[in-house]
Image 1 (cartoon, rainbow, N blue to C red):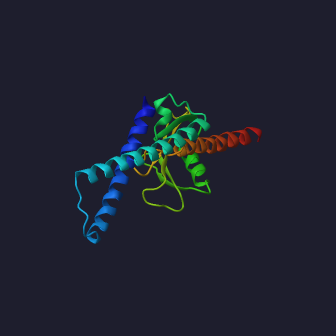
Image 2 (image 1 turned 60 degrees about the horizontal axis):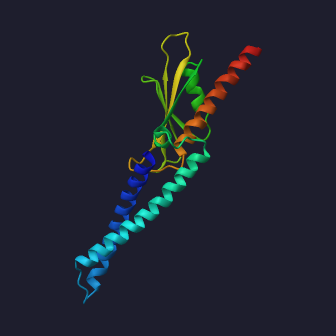
Image 3 (image 1 turned 60 degrees about the vertical axis):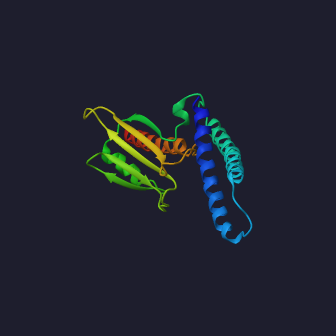
Length: 193
């Protein structure tokens, strides 16, 4: 069911883009065409061509996207696997200050910390507007001596994004591995001393 909706969304988006491109191409060619008249048939032909090209293009991209997701081991029958907004909550014995230090230790990411809300935003050193992902880490601890719940979230920067080829899922998995490894290896080193 959700795969069908994904195909439909992609078809509408890409058909719309192709329609806009066709209309712009026609508009800029029209002043130079002296004897050509545009009628209802030409408009229908352009619309059908655009929908077909957009549909084929979107089917191709969505199929590649689903292949990437299945290669990552995701269950394509679950809606949560197909959504672009990915998140995972892990429980670890770590303080917010320790988590902050771990995030600052990521060499390929820049950490922006909000100590009031106990969140950390991870950014690429080179920012491109409307391209890439927003990755955040939310920290919560119910009691002082209890383990903390760390929620890792990743979503596309572009709100119109329909496919991500598993990028947000990979971000969440990678950040989880890095945090877990850092916390567990520091705990193991402390226990051996």
